[in-house]
Length: 308
Image (cartoon, rainbow, N blue to C red; front, side):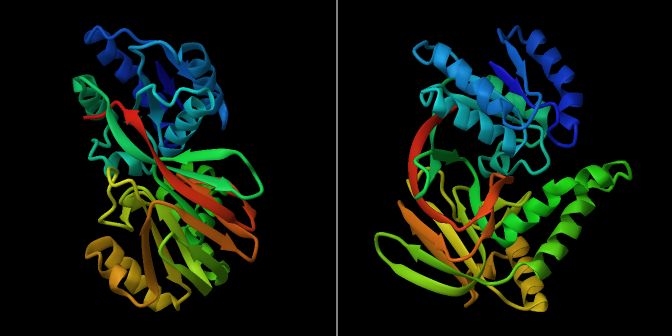
């Protein structure tokens, strides 16, 4: 079953899908396809599919789109009781961080060919978080951010990309969003608790709980992240001036030495508890989480992926 988000990648997924179908037919692949029409539709489609087919074998569900599409399909399968249905992925979005994290080609047709070579599913770690005020569990393949990175996501998703699209300046949306978010985002109080430690921060700025190496469209925030260790990585960056932040960001992109900075704090744990005292922006897999006071409990589970 292919669940395709034609809007992913500013419409690039819609353009590439006919080429994917040509390959599927040439390879004589037996498949069905469902197209999403609006945000959240991927959850609905995947949930309905899981409710109907969760006890049947030989199914693989493939998300075609960006990290947000993958996030919707993952959670739809979970809500429908389909956690044992293997999940495949053809990246056709803007960021494609999960593809990078599993060394999957970020070109859709190359990723499809890799997908067709798979003979059996592979179990990978998946993050799970629950808000204290909400019994609903949310799964994530990539990361959950509070503060700066979430503010960038909110700004970029607020229509700037569509506004710039007609001028072929979509990537500029992220630059504008980053600058705007840096000066708007204030330091905030954060409490971090693991089974081994508890720490308070008075001026947290960027707070990212990650399952993979990358965030923000290829930024290696946690080069040593491991999808097989049963643990999540938390990176907390304290508020600093713009010049120090630029230096830190360059190190993040190039050497990985950002983790040695005294204002960068790293936790690796099977469970995490994060709480903030103020209303903050949040994001998961590049999708907005409503601004709120966060009180999140994290853990790790495993599920099968159709990857090689």
